[in-house]
Length: 172
Image (tube, rainbow, N blue to C red; front, side):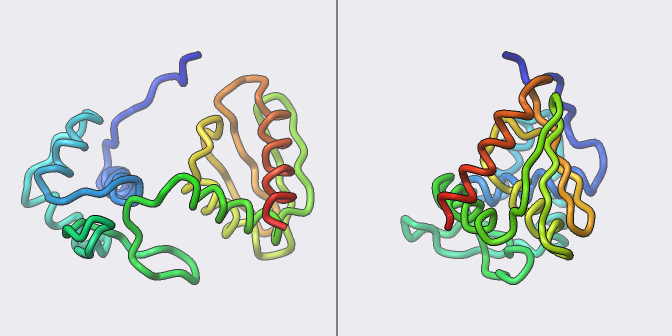
């Protein structure tokens, strides 16, 4: 199944979001490595621009799992510790914990899933979903107590809603 067209970041904000995703998703040792990863996505960037982007997003160099220096970005929300190359199992466990704490209901229609949370919690849950490794999720929109998820599969809403309910029971 094709995931549809994916456009390369065209704006500074989109480029910086992609850089953040790359730094959280894998260990990046140098600006040259980062530039190569961006080029693989069709994003051409000069070293000077890349250097400014790293400063603006607050990237820091930290010791990776193997002891070498890698770029990391600070977490969002209450956890501001630098994040680098997080294991998908760790992300899944974090999302399961948040679902257990915050998910009230999950309903779907075609490729749309609506998650209900306590008041004020939707943005926090949506951010965790956006940073998760659920390939069937195209994106989220959050209100005060509601998260809307759009799935990649035109009829994938039921499966994704079920997945979130399962995550909530795993994290309990």
